[in-house]
Image (cartoon, rainbow, N blue to C red; front, top):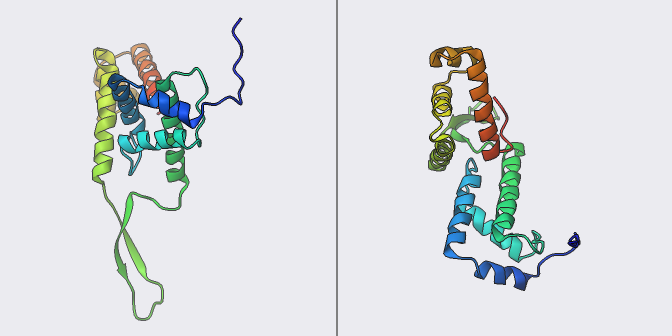
Length: 194
């Protein structure tokens, strides 16, 4: 019978350092790949930032590394948590990072200045979108029905319009839609279903 690990057990800083130093180049590439995937949609963060934050939090003891867990499992879990927290703070914060103040005017008879907003797409937004699309297309690659459905959705068609454009019956469309949504929920468990 195997012993149940004590929930209070954690690796020391020295043990964490030793494990991290022992990771192979292939493991680091996998960790970077995981970071790239989890970083999709994070404004102002790169995959390197996310991986660095995870490593720092493990080394300084902010995040716990339980004994017996594979390093990539631990890194993925920590990076997922950090990315999730960052997304939540962005959504709940008072500042919309997508809106930039374009001009500020003040009239002589009015003491309240007027600001005009301007929405811009930053290079980070573009890069994040491209990364997300690469991951999405890799997920459906070789699955013709799912590839067609993704392209139809990308054209802005949903429901009956998408089904008609594809020339599919209701059952075929619903089956493909559910398969695609399952794959999407694996990619991003926090994604809202459309």
